[in-house]
Amino acid sequence: MKNIDIRTGALAPLLVKLSLPVLAGQVFGLLYNLVDTFFIARIDTSDPWLVGATGLVFPIYFIFMATSFGITGGVSSLVARAIGAGKTQELDKTAESGIFLSITASVICLAVMYPLGDPLLRLFGGSNELLAYGKQYLWWVLPTVPFMMFNAVFTGILQGEGRTKHMMVSMMIGTIVNIILDPVLIFGAKMGLGGAGLATAIGNASSSVYLLVVFLTRKSTVKIHWKASNISFPVMGEIIRVGLPQSIMNFLASISFIFYNRIMVSINPMIITAFTLYSRLEQLALIPIWAVSSALSSIAGQAAGAGDFKRMKDSSRVSSLLCFGVCGVLFFVFVISSSRLFGVFQSDPQVLLLASQIVLWMALASYLAIPVFMANTIMSVAGFANRSLIFTIIRIYGLNVPACILGAYVIGKNLSSTMVAIFVSSVITVIMYLIIEKRFFSSLEKGTLHISVLKKDEVPAQK
Image (tube, helix red, strand yellow):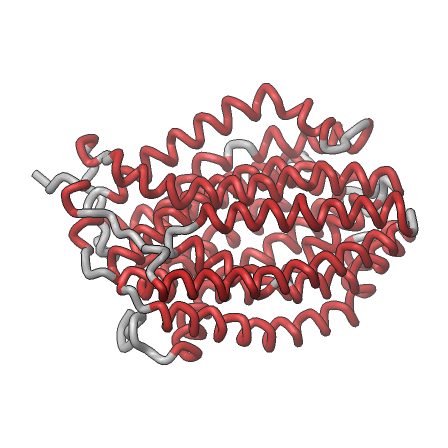
């Protein structure tokens, strides 16, 4: 980026400058989620299962997202570390290797999901109208997968380089196309929920076209040569080494929704709709965390490649403080205005009551998780995503799910006790992660952990 040095610039201004384009793109993404939810709810505002169906499909959709996040994370880490170490010539085969990996991932995802979609929706708690709506939405959203994987490769390259402007434009284009097509396909073409799914697929395809143009016009240091010989197994191996733990990490988070959905349904089936409504609107306060985390990947990744552990540590601290300040205000506004916001998208009084019981405790839990986001980002981009995976397993299945079970079946046996239990587990989690991150940096400084960069002889020279 012009007039900015990612490896030496002042952290707070640099984080803001790199975050703002991502933030702008994600605001458009949030706008899509809100508009999408609005139009889906408008199919029949008295039918609580329509919005609930998107929540039912979310764990499956999250599997796709988890895979794409893994590809983005692996590519971003590879690119950032190589740039930080001054070995950009070793990135020549990154694009083709990433594209081949994305195609492989797409084929596997679609081959599994088309035959197993129905039983998976049943496993996630779908039945009767909820299941029927869920299947309608799922079949039309599945074509999104190849474009999502393709976008993950180029987003990872841009993120590793710190070229966040192109990431922003890509997200904006996809969102605008999606928003335009939502009412056209849902109501004009009378596709209902299927129209919302198809609009998502076409929006992602539009982003893919833009990203392809960016790379064809040489706006990145990483080039596409369109040669099969450029598919490098060492490069793919490095992407997978860092990205696979991140994919598994997000996949396990998705699988945890099986437990959460089952627990919530056992209390009251309409909690799924209420929780889906909350989750979509919560993004109003969450998007700065994702934007700053993306900026942190660029800064900490290049610092890791250069062996600058102090800058890595400082960037994590400044990122957390920045998010605590901004998100604190946003979460406060969200909580006090939540009843009016929920009423825009849902009229069922039971759903609105349940959502009002969820909002405060979940907002507090999400706010406390800010250092967890940053610690996971630091470890992953430095090439230690396996550690993030282990700690995520402990966080979800050792703390959060057991806490949810205790609240629902042992302590109060109602929604309120479940929410309190989740909040308590979040407090324990953030304390655990602060200790983990401190020991991680200590190990780097002592030399017991070593940051690796792909060696030149592992990437054959361009012929």
